[in-house]
Image 1: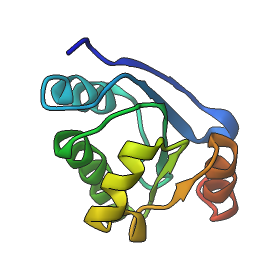
Image 2 (image 1 turned 90 degrees about the horizontal axis):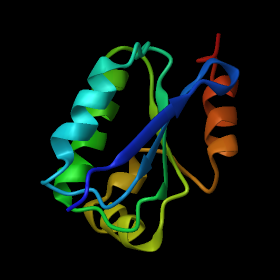
Image 3 (image 1 turned 45 degrees about the vertical axis):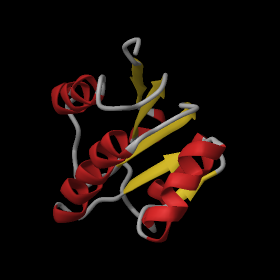
Image 4 (image 1 turned 180 degrees about the vertical axis):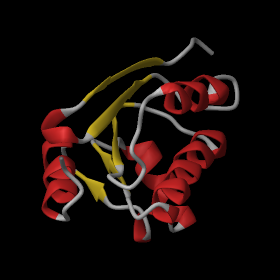
Length: 120
């Protein structure tokens, strides 16, 4: 599987990580390393833009859940945005969507974090 294309930005002080490519066991470590190297304030939370992720297996899901758990322990939350149909089905089957906020767009995810008091 080709490596993921990863990028980040900070609209309104919220870190948004854009993920492009299929997320599975072959590139899980790449995403983990990328997130670990970013200067993230876990108390503020973060947004994962998954609009470029057509497929995700349990390995990718595990990375997102680990980030969500780390943020939660520090008072923040992880929000997901732009989730495509196959990953959305994975979130539905596993029940993740009940615990990790899912938004149609990055803009609505960022707005949800900033309105919750997690912005600068």
